[in-house]
Image (tube, one colour):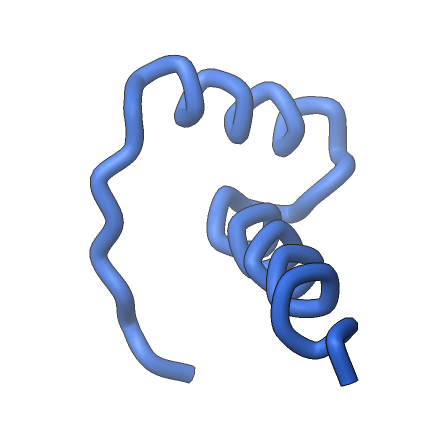
Length: 48
């Protein structure tokens, strides 16, 4: 994997932390990877 630095609003970070606390994801990184994967499936890979 590659390291990517992203600036996010505080509200997004709070939401990510809530997902982690609820044990829906093991970390912020995992939640962000899942969101990016879903976006790519919908916007890019789903077109084919």
